Amino acid sequence: MAETQHVLATRMGLLRLGHIEEFDTSNPKEWNSYASRLMFYLEANKVSADADKRAVLLSSCGSALFKLVESLLSPAKPVERSFDEIISVLNDHFAPEPSEIVNRHIFYQLADTHQSYLLNRISCRSTPSLRSLKLSVFLSIEANFRRFTEQPTRPPRTRRKPKWMEDYVI
Image 1 (cartoon, rainbow, N blue to C red):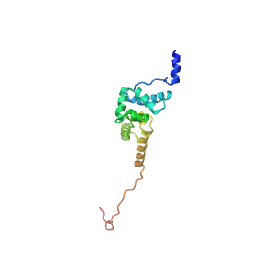
Image 2 (cartoon, rainbow, N blue to C red):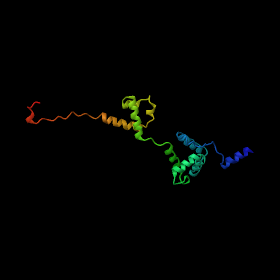
Image 3 (spheres, rainbow, N blue to C red):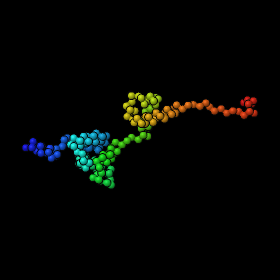
Image 4 (cartoon, rainbow, N blue to C red):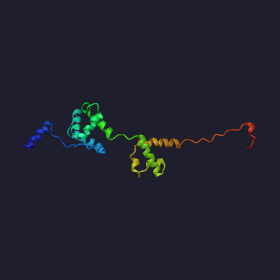
C-alpha cells in the first residue's frame, strides 16, 4: 500500500526530496547558508518556475522571515515580486556589502597597531583580519601609497640675488 502511494506520488510529482526548515532571524549570519540550501532544495526537487520557487520560499521560511519580507518589500506584496527580487532584497538586508570607508578605517587601525609598512601588511599572512578585507581596498591604498612615495623630489628653488645685492653680505 505504502509502495503504491510512493509510486503514485512520484508519478504525480508530489514527492519532495529533502526538507527545508524555517530561517532563524535571530542569527542573520546564517542567511548565506540558508539561501544556498534553499537553492539546492529547489534544484533537487526540480522546481524551476519563478512562481513555484517564490511559493516554496515564502511557505517554508517561517513567520518571522515572512513578516520581514513583507516589510522590506512594502508597499508591494511578496506575491507581486519575483523570486530573484525577494532573494536580492534579503541578501542586501542580511549580508550587505561592507563600506569601503569602513574597510579603510579597519585597515589603517591594523596597520597602526602592527607598526609596519603598508606594503608588508598587504602581503602578510599572519593577520587573518587583514585577509578578510576586500582586495580592491588594498589595491587602491597601495596605489595611493606608491603615488606619494615615488614622486620625484625636486631640488629646492633658489632665488637669485639681484645684481646690486651680490656684493652685500649678511
